[in-house]
Length: 287
Image 1 (cartoon, one colour):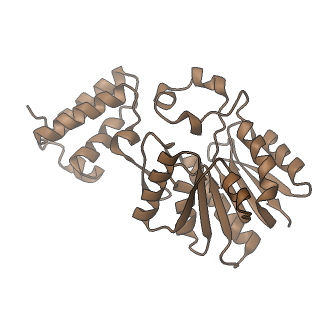
Image 2 (tube, rainbow, N blue to C red):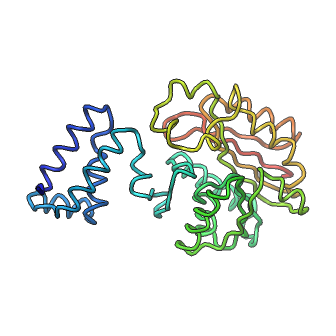
Image 3 (cartoon, one colour):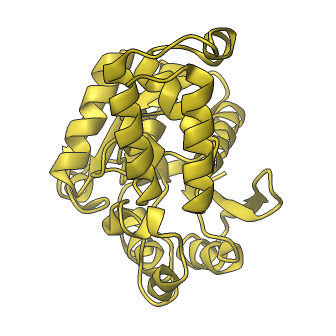
């Protein structure tokens, strides 16, 4: 038995509300399975769904009701105006990370002016959202990206190919492969794991049960990866360089302090995201 579009949406909204999920997810999922944008979906709201679409949609809504993120069901998420493939091996790109990319591009243009062929590395690239976006937004950059996860790198490579970005992907733990290769960069950017371990006990199971813990949690205070960065960064940054980190709420002062201790004389700034939370830390080295 099939359903009209409005009936399917009403069912999904009611079901997801009972499961305490975002009832708007039903509309996103139906657009995906019906192959319609929002305007067309609403214009055709009294049309009947094909039985196989209704069946697939019901299954997807129930999956989301059980906690599976919508993006892992549809296999995509938008970032900086582009569509990236995502799967459970990678963190789902967030809007806050778009702000990190925007801030980094602005500072690269300001610090290095018209210099081309700046070498940039995205550490812990995941889906490749940061590295691919930087390359496409500023094609003169020479972009490398690392991740410890082979599965994540496979997803990042697919996104780079699909979106036409020339990025050099390397498997390795943080900056280790570049230290071994004697490589140095004008910019190191990273959205590393920064959530304290104990936070997993109160966070939504949509995140904790489905997104990769390797990309989320970083010790008792969430700062373990930044501490490792401080050991490695002096070995890979050029004399004049920009370091750009995404951080967790309330970590700005601590991470800024680490960078100031590691690079005495550097200009370090903490900036807030659109919600007014400290979210990015930038260090201008050798200026």
